[in-house]
Length: 76
Image 1 (cartoon, rainbow, N blue to C red):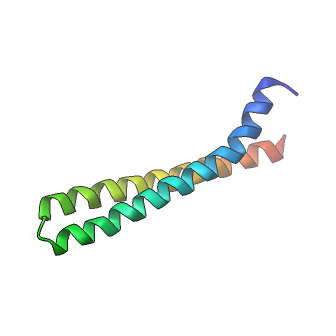
Image 2 (tube, rainbow, N blue to C red):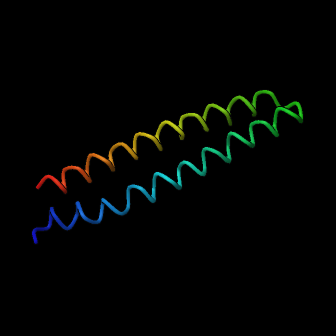
């Protein structure tokens, strides 16, 4: 098995795990944003919400990349 095939196989397992970890972090920040808003920390709340949505987008992009890697592995 070539080095590229080994790398793709490892990537096939690492990408979904990394995506779920980023998804959990984004959910935490979005919930923290609500908590900050309750305490009147509007700027901190908006910043946490912005980071949370950015991480949510990143998580979905990583999951899409994992699907592409999986499809490429199955196609070859």
